[in-house]
Amino acid sequence: MTDQRIEGAANGISGKLKNGLGNLTGDTKLQVEGKFDEVKGKALDAYGRAIDKLETLSERAPADLRDPINTGLDFARRKPLLTTGILAGLAFLLAGSGRRRY
Image (cartoon, rainbow, N blue to C red; front, side):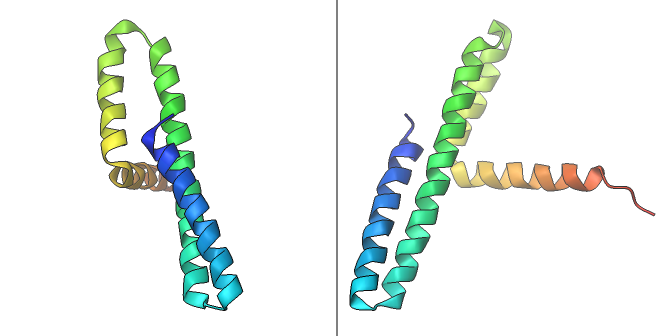
């Protein structure tokens, strides 16, 4: 289990508590913060699951590819937001390149 998954679970629980407390007190700001923390927790958990899955797949990779794969995974663990931005940009470029232009 990666640190992102642990942090995601903690943020999710914190968000639920804030949201519940906001509902009880009628504090909309606290409710919004709670919802944001819940979403952030789910995103971190999903990111951690992806890293775990990639780590499992890297163990099956040929020996000469393991070092570059592990270097990439270490980068992804240290800089999750940057990695997500890079992947989103690549997805955007790939989606745009598949379209026909008239």
